[in-house]
Image 1 (spheres, rainbow, N blue to C red):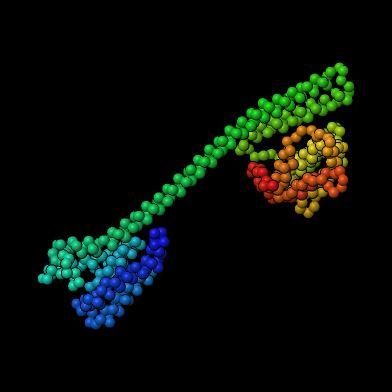
Image 2 (image 1 turned 180 degrees about the vertical axis):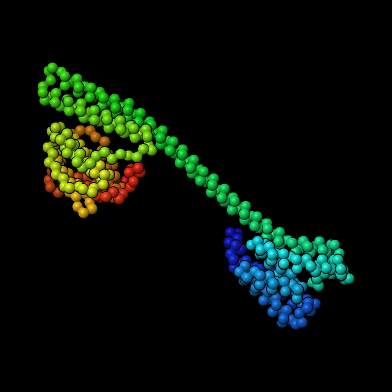
Length: 406
């Protein structure tokens, strides 16, 4: 069924049907001898007029409607076959060519109106090939008026149907757009609710434990029995804990205000202070940085966070707490290398989430760079390498970081 529907929707199929509507009655007239009652003097001329009219209506009724309408009207006058006018009336009404519609419909109404008012047919026929239909008087006028106006009404009905379908499609698109916005709004509300829940959990859980740690370290630092070394380390724990609470507060602020643009806080120059902090914790750090003029702020922030994560892993897992850091800029890239001793297999490292480097690798990939962390070919060495763009050409900082496919 759908195949047949598609066939009738094509322009070529409609052209063929229009030609058949005109040529079919002409062929019947030739077979039944009706052509003898028309004003055409010979059968070849009658056939030629019918074929020309059928071809013109089938092929050129859209592009040359004035010419084809005149051909249809002339054919009707000469051969008494009104079917070309029916087709043209429908086609012209579909394209709202009202002057031509008036011409084709008016010509169809002239003859029955004339016969009904002035020359009633004595034999009860209006057209020679119509022997069983009302022809004279008011009945004939009404019948042929309906026949003339019907194609016009069908054209108007088709236009109204198409307009209704277009309006229906427009309403469907608008409804789909509203549904999409509603889904996005619902998802946004759920996301905000989840972020608020996470903020509350972090505040009540992590914040509480860090505060207890800072408070305990502060109490140990003022204990009279504590040595100078213990007091120094406790003061460092208090300082780092307070810094952690400050960072946690910033994270909670971000979770509470998701529309705020992220702020880049760290630069490559800040790595020096970071190195000093870890040296005070007993990590031997040797680091060297080249000139990073023109490096994007987002790249510098990412570089700082990679170094921080690497030093944290060295403190947790390395056999000997030592790290060599090299930051080397090139023409359009920033190369970072951090090497450290591997952890012995029989040593238990400090606990961690195991997600830090994976998330940083995702951010590096989204920024247009790479991050790898693997054991080196040298025995007992672990190497972290980052290759980052000097100019930020990856994602927008406001875009969420999604997990990689690896």
